[in-house]
Image (cartoon, rainbow, N blue to C red; front, side, top):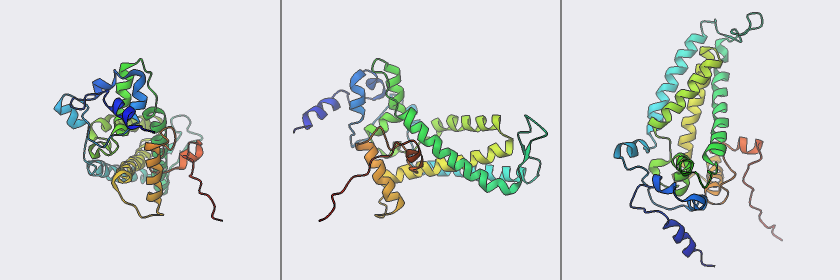
Length: 262
């Protein structure tokens, strides 16, 4: 069966010498099939050099920018917790509020990391892998800029981690949200743990594309899982740093069956 012709025909739907973002909005019903046929080349999204520069980054910008913030928030809110005046539910009731001692710091921090893995899964499954309506030019563009471009060019190293500029308002949103529903110190520690979880996720994602983990290791298993997600099972296998939520929500990529030796 000759599949070269149809694939080439789909690739020719865009002009690769021009920015892609505006072009993909016109693909309509052909977009979903086109975006899941990967190419081994870098891509350009925007006409503006400035906006284009903000849309990509080197992998090490993520730990350089966010790890110091994790350390600062962790130390700052640990000191607040050490004052022994932080209480849960105090805004609702004084009779049944719960004291939060400094010994709770590790548990709250790990809870934040676990919370991130759930956010990672939900965003990847329901936002990044939404199927935009074929008649919506702007939703197709939105999907492509959020995640479609990564599936189209999975080995473009400048687009494998979230650039700090567009990531900042999203990170800020989660911080404000936690501060609104939790005491300051509790929210800050959970946020710091979640932020570290995000950094580990981005570093893991980059490594799964370009790293060479030892056979049989955890990262080797996750790399195989992620490769299958890109090239065979785009509607399952949404976990990047862990398969936990794929197990929980029954979206695990099926294991290959091997015939038994006689």
